[in-house]
Length: 569
Image 1 (cartoon, rainbow, N blue to C red):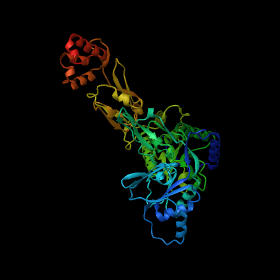
Image 2: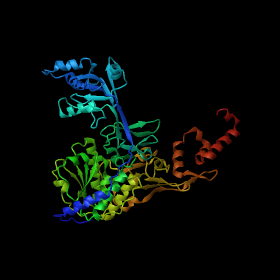
Image 3: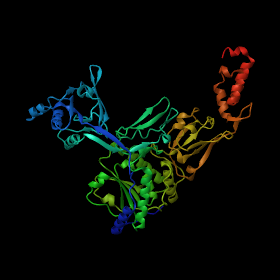
Image 4: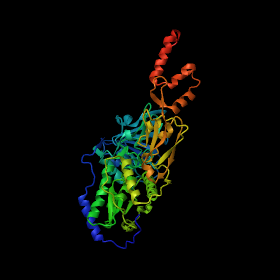
């Protein structure tokens, strides 16, 4: 592990030149023709809140939008306004209704498709259908004291503001211009084959559902299976779901994770080749970067993202493996609280992983909101690690992360023991009760990664590779013998990468034809469970020791010998 260094100064001019050369040489990963989501708005607006504020807003928009409906959801404060008569005259003809109670209104949807359902005398009324003779509203302006949609990232077309505020003025201008067809990028994609959410009716991973600040993710339940579905019309591209997903089943589109990792490696390599020294990677939102008055010091290489969640633990550690002395995450006041918690959790996990591999956790740090540039531009306290060759980006997320961890282990001094990680970390092993386990292979069928594997008909076994285990719990919840428990933590030793045999036993062969078809423990377990079953009483108990083909033949031969039994079939 590199020793601390006393960096009193760097040749900032040389580093700036190296940074510019690297930027010119390495292109930012971008989709040339990204998938898009289309919204169509005709400008029909629903305004919620106190009647006075609602009419004030309507008076400003009545000549700019084709249809406005007012819904009074709270009392207006008494206020002497000389323009009340003018406001009343401008809005008197607009439909105006009152909600009978705080829970009378149910609102859902997005730009161009808002459904507002009002409870009236025990019945649900579609407010847009009743007032505008159309299925829904295109836009919603919420002027209430408390937003009706209590989300950190609200759907497009929904504006929750207070009357008279700068945000309120901006919302009025935005609403007036929200007529037409609009497109936004499709931010994420879901690969159901990699998803560990649920399999064969067994519950598993829910990390993505817990992190979306826009409530754009949902678990959809079929007759047996459940799957994760993304509502692209409500997704803001915060990226928290993709960062939280341990398998890469949810993948961010702009930029995609693998090209972003390749960009980091390429940028750092080009910086070194241009004689830049001691690079620090700063992950920052593009909006925060634009607000800064001065440019970062020459050794600071900025990775500008729409949202901090677009890069996660795997990218931060990959930057260190690619030769960054430190990775610094720039706090942003605009980051939703849910996303910030997700980033903090991954930050804690990454620091623990660095410590387990024998590196200083301080190679990963936060930059405060109020930083004046001093924390951003501070010199790194340690020299960079030996940079690995350009990584192979063809594999999945977990495969790329394992390659990064392997390189960091080779450059550090792993302590060789299981290291505790914060709750929810996707690292760990399983413990198997060998007396209970029957090698039924149910856990192997449920496992969404290569962590669990089985043998063949002649050599039944259960094998486990810890590097691939994401602690989704599917194996534990789906084991019919309740023989599996999770053992969270990070094993900082080479054994983590090895596939070890957990249990193995000879195959049980059919007593009639000799074909191997199960294990002795499986047959013993079945015999215990069916000891009182009438179908397997007496001589028929031997059928439990037959393969499926011989069992059927034995049943039909018994029927042929006893014609009276045929009448009972």
